Image: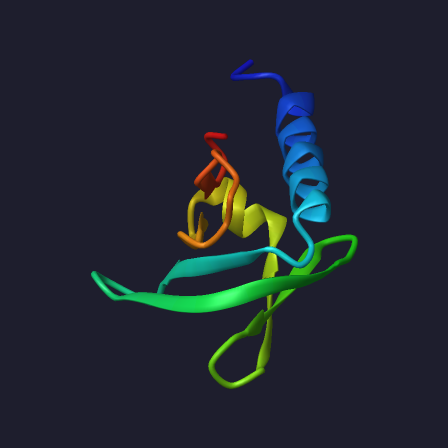
Length: 95
């Protein structure tokens, strides 16, 4: 058997808890949109739900949602803005 089937669930719970603790924090959201296309958005984490979390874009106040699985799979990365005073600069599946 490859890997522990519970470890993926534990990683998702950790990511969800990390996001919960960062509500109101500004991040640059990096998400892939096809081959070699990346989109970067300046956003603030606004809410946490069972399977997704929401962010509000700074430039136009639009709300977008991302799943915790997106973070775990590396399809979405959150990079803290320079104006945050926290030493942990990245939030992704490796943290």
